[in-house]
Image (cartoon, helix red, strand yellow):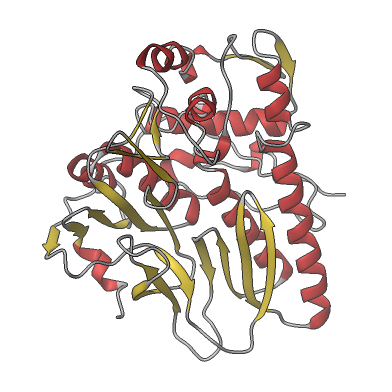
Length: 373
């Protein structure tokens, strides 16, 4: 059986290009392998920011509006609804491709979900304070964590798992922890505190890893690579509204993606046309949230202070060269806030974004090139 691309074959830094490596050849037996190194891309030329009245907003991707002779693979994975719409060259290719996608996604989740008791992440978390042996694949995932932590100034921090457990937005009755508890848990967070040696890793007591900050978007791009390897030229991969497209839908010049209104979840308002190869992801706090003592708490927690983000942003949508990069930028910008978030995105050539606040919006000028309605 073949495995994923080895680090030696990946010569470009994920942080520099945000481009995922080739996916494993069929049948997939491992999660993505990639060499990553800390660093920052050179600042792009300044992008002109346009603003418009809040009565006209373009929110994040919500649904696909194209029709046509497409097959659809639907599964529940990674805590969300996942769908792959594609045009297979033959029924035989479709059968093998769908089998491989299911197998790869199941294995990826089984290895890297903190909600799977037997996952490598759960084993590392349970053994906090002790060394845990890991394979090369997991080492490479941790390399990516190091790169993202450096790139985002600590906003994307895989060690924030303990904070996410503390706030626990998945419970029916979430509670606001007292400041002393937040401070105590926050003290355990911080990628530089992770100890690594060849083939093993050790967390400090109280630490916990969580790949939820970028794992789903990474999976979307790897499924896109599986599609390419299978000979599928036209596809849309949508995992919980994080999307990557290949080619075009039959009879259409681009994939049209419906956009959800953050002020009215479940309602669409406008759409974008996503050309071949692009990815789109959004970050927002209008779905998973609760109100306590008159204050709204969203599920996106800033690991730098331990509290849910609260600066008026409702949603950030980013279109980029792939879904992984779109997700990295949207999450980071959401935590940074409207002005700093836009400035961060402007450093990445080719990335376009829309930021929606409670009363207004701002977007890069290039975002309008994708808007069709």
